[in-house]
Image 1: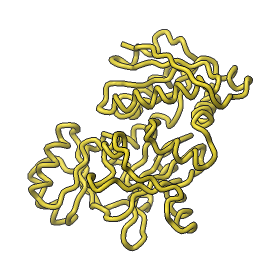
Image 2 (image 1 turned 60 degrees about the horizontal axis):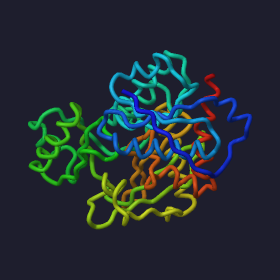
Image 3 (image 1 turned 45 degrees about the vertical axis):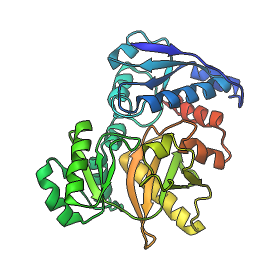
Image 4 (image 1 turned 30 degrees about the vertical axis):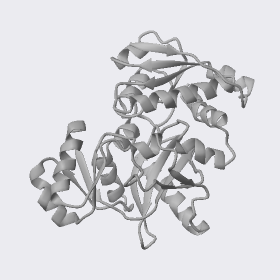
Length: 324
């Protein structure tokens, strides 16, 4: 079922001719994935910003059969604020494309590929982009061989989840087995990769431009920038400027753009990157529908570039006009 949500605010105003061209906009949020609650927060924030900018927008909490969303659409285009499977993985994008309804963000192939962390890493590897050594894990019996080949510590994650859901840091065969069991309950494909010890950075992309990089560090209560650090904690440290020398930040931004382009993404997204003790950067993943909550990184990076939240969502939406 789809529940309609309405909210409003006042801020930046989109040009009247643009508002007219955009028509009626549905903000899809919620969904049935493990990231439902984050998606609802993102969707409400996007909706509030679009309405504040003067766009004729309303919210839809998307649950159940996605095909029903296009049976008798009362909208001209869709702002996708659905995170995780069923909203970010190409399925919804394919349905909207087949129905001829313009939508925000990456198309079918890029959405599906980026959602699959394992195959994204194959693409990085094939294109000569740096990414931590990794293995797909399909059974507990592989734990010893994986530790022998990759060493420790390791990161264990479900290949198709976002928001750091199900991720564990492990330092032994026994811990790897336990972490695999947890991840395998969420996904039939589990990715194990070498843990990069060092600072984490994220680079947001908007209309083929890299926004200012953000340096991330969770409090000592978190082993890494996990779900709680992302969405719940108030003591996570976000650094803008990110703390790198200008040339290193340019190198980081270019790597993020390269990753975004080889996966085939468009309009907007976010790339997560680690830096090791030697100063080398390592690609972790590409997010095609990043969070847009009050803790989220894309709005933060946009703000550092002088782009308000309202202008950000309008610019993302504006790119759908090329499809109309």
